[in-house]
Image (cartoon, rainbow, N blue to C red):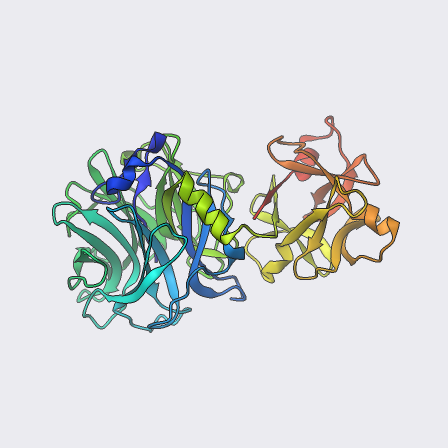
Amino acid sequence: MKRRTLMAAAGGAAVAGAVAGPGPAAAAAYTGYAMAYFTESPTMAAAVYGLHLAVSSDGLNWTPLNQNRPVAMPTLGSTGLRDPFILRKQDGTFTVLATDLKGTDWAYQSRHLHVWDSADLRGFTGYRLLKVHSLATHAWAPEAVWDPARGQYAIVYSAVNASGHNVLMVSYTTDFRTATDGVVFFDPGYDAIDGSFVTVGGVHYMYYKNNTNSTLLGTRSGTAGPNSWSVYTGAISPGRGVEAPQIVKSNTANTWWMWGDTWSPNGRFFAWQTADVASGSWTPLNDRAYTQPLNSKHPGIAPVTAAELSGLTATFGTPAWNRIKSYNFPDRYVRHADNVARIDVYPFDPYQDQQWTLVPGLADAAGVSFRSVNFPAMYLRHSGYALVLAADDGSATFRADATFHRTAGLADSSWTSFRSHNVPDRYLRHSGYVLRIDPITSGSPATDRQDATFRVVH
């Protein structure tokens, strides 16, 4: 399931959601991005079906807000949401739409969507349910766009109709309080969900999930009307099941990104980029290029102004914890497991094992020590050159072993390396996915320098 609307063009000029531009708000330059999502993790320990928000200045690396807790919770219908979508309306304010579904009870049939209004995404008002069809089925993954020919917003979502499989349906509204009864918008002849829209050069594009094989496909239309879409791409896949396409225009370059999410609770985002949406050709990004919010599922992304970006951060705050991402295995993060420090493939549970509070160095405040979030009396230290999680015994040796100094990344100066405080010719690195400290110099093999390079993220 999925959602999406307007993007910002290079230099801040607005490019439309599926049918038209974003209206008066286009006068403001977009300098950042906001993401709506919900959370799950492999064992469902992180399952929280409320509205979460994250922000980004570059559109690729994301910072969760409100300590990765919901900023709003639904109280009607199932009392849970999936697939939140942020729409900037013609007047510049926002409406948030979401699937009415708590958890994974796919038999739950709701004809309604959760709806909130917001002036600036810092507060959410007018919470309500919106009925979009009268069928005996669900309404999944809404996305809304302005249709100037109708003078209404088109709400597109997935539902099972007389065909017996999921199709994309559309309902029209002016106020997101009442909507026309849904009609078929796109039916490729097989199960299809998760429509995501954008307009480029007067042509309308919709990407969706082929739900029979969990790949993404792109369609286009000259009118953006119901049943006017034709497929123009081959199947897009990261080599495993993917859904929730989300297309975002860079605020600063002629670059488009498309996000996708895994279909299972093992929520991992994938990203592709192109300089030409019309070509239908997308290049996958290496995990090194982007970082998703912790445990995030099904992103809905909208560009925001500098004032909106700073306002969101000021209102909700940024996390008090960090995660540490490996440079040469960027799908892996530093975590503790049975008190051994290692790097493991994201996502995993307990997810708190990868969360660290970076505090002033215990032996030197100019350095840094890594305190565990879920075992806050314990820190990473080296012992026999191996990194372990251990309780602070108050000794000078412990404090020195648990202190490191940040340096420019040995493999990439825009990343970070960590030099041992009391064995200063040794750096934190992974070997066989286990962390230790080893001597590394500029003359060391490239692999060693890569093993010792990390990125501090959220």
